[in-house]
Length: 143
Image 1 (spheres, rainbow, N blue to C red):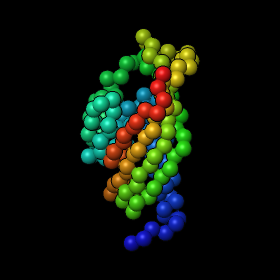
Image 2: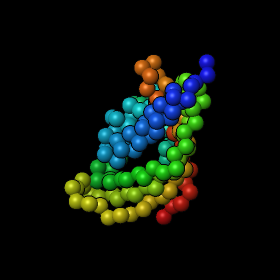
Image 3: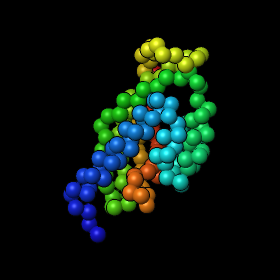
């Protein structure tokens, strides 16, 4: 069955919202929320490792330094809806990171880390939510 333009546009917005939710949750250290955005068989290719499924993603994120502050600026998002159950996205992130000894409420120094190109694939679960099936990145610029 072919998707009508309204359903396609809604799906594109839902995938884009999933991308932004991922980075807002990551930058807020809400790692449970980050992991919940992955399908049960979803794979995050992160720092040379394959994190498979929400539990593995959560375990890896809980190992982050407690004083780490990050900000991911998401740009140039292009969503492709393949069908009712699958989609892909390509976009760039500009990443800022500061590693402190301890968490702090003070603003962190602005330390650009990298610009990355991401390719995400999504699958729609039985409840109608778009979940990450895969997330990969490639550095474009690094400091």
